[in-house]
Length: 422
Image 1 (cartoon, one colour):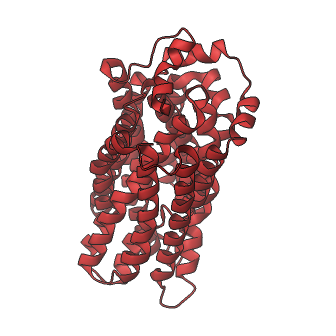
Image 2: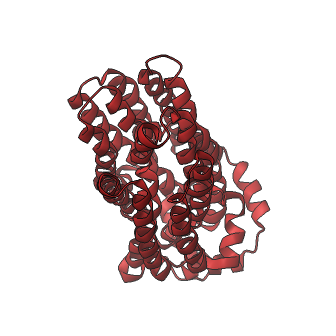
Image 3: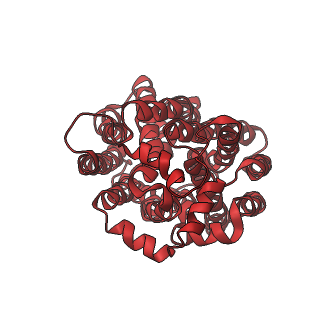
C-alpha cells in the first residue's frame, strides 16, 4: 500500500471523516490559502526590485547590507516552526491569519517611513517576516490536511498564488516606483496584502478530521518531534531543506542586479523577477499534478538537482539578454518544482497525524539558509572589482545539486531502487 493510500484510510482507522480531497470545501481552502501566499510571497518575490532600487538610488554602495533585509524577511517566514503546533492549537488558523492581516501591512507602512537600513531590517525584514510565518503555516497546513491523492495538485494550485503574487506585485512596484517613489510602492503593497489576507482569513480552516485525530491521540509535540527525527527518511528530508535554502533564492534576488551589471536594458532587470514568478505561477500546478501521477519523490529529486544544474550550466554562461531570459525561465520551472514538492512530500514522509510537527521542524530548518544565503552570495559577488556574479551562480548551483543528491537518497530510502511511482 502506498503512502497516499495509507493517508486515505487513516480516517477510517480513527473513526473520523476522510479528507474531502477536493469538492467545494477542499478547493475553497486552496483558494483562500493561495490568496494568503499571494500576499506574503508577492512581497518576498518582488524584493529583487526593491534591492536594485535601494542599492542604486536610496542607499548606493550598500548592497551587502541591504541584502539582509530580504533574507531576514524570508528567514522569519518560518520562525514559528518549533512552536507551530502549539500556536495552531492556541490560536487556530483564522486568528493566525487575522493577526497577519494587521501586522503585515503595518510592517510595510512602517518601512515606507524609514530613513536608515537598520529600520528596514526591523520593518520590511523582521516584522513582516514574523507576520508571514503565521500565514505560511496556516495556509500550507490546512491544504495538506484536506487532500490525500490530489495533494500535489492542491499544493501546486496553492503555491500558484505565490507565483502570481510575485508577478503582480513586482510589476506594480516597478510602476509605482517610477511614478510615485518607493515609499508609495510599500504603502500600496501593504493595502494589497490587507485585502488578500482578509480573504485567506475567511476561507482557510483546518480539516475537522485532523483535529479529531489529534484529540484521539494526544501525543505531546516533543514526543512527535522525537519520533520524527528517529526516521531516516525524515532526516534526509530535513537535510534537503537545510542545504538547498542557502542557494534557492539567490537567482531571484540577484538577477535584477546582474542584468544591470551587464548593462542590459533597464526593462530587463525590472522584469526578470516577474518572469521567474510568471513561470512559477504556471508551472507549480503542473509540477504538483506531475508529482501525483509519476511520484512526488521522483519529481522532487529531479527538480532540485536540475535547479542546481541550471545555475552551474546556464547562469554561469549567461552574458546576453537572451541567455539571461533563458536562465530565468529554466530556473523558474525547476525551482518551482522543488518548492512545490518540498511541501507535498511532508505528509508522505512524516505521516498524516504529524503534519503540523513535521512542517514546524522542516521549515524551521529553512531559516538559517534563507537568512544568510543571499547575504553570503552578495559578499561572494563583491569579493572582486567589478563584482563577479559567476561566483554566486556556482555557490547556488552547488548547494542545490548537493540537496538534489540528498533528495535522491531520500527517494531510495523511502521507495527502494524500483522505478515506480513514489
